[in-house]
Image (tube, rainbow, N blue to C red):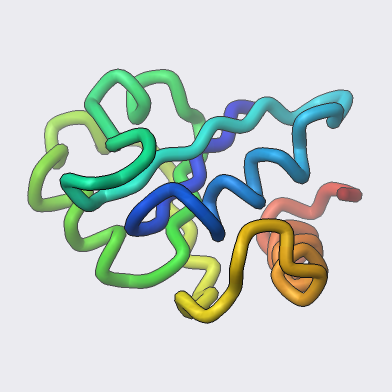
Length: 109
């Protein structure tokens, strides 16, 4: 399954989620950000590649729908509800990501 993680800057939350799945046997992950200064800014190509789009906050999903609405039909969008208060690879963030991914995707991480 191809997962795309989205946050604002693609520096902490979404990048941590991508790295968490680097060696997963059945999941492929990429990450991007919604803001102009993001490390990797989300494009229609990212959305076309993904089977499931996982956003950290509702505003990220709203932005995707506004800017890339034509690329989203048939895409499952999941709001992980993870606030912007964690840094890259924060152990609490990693634990929360594991919990939310298992909850929404029913896969072992």
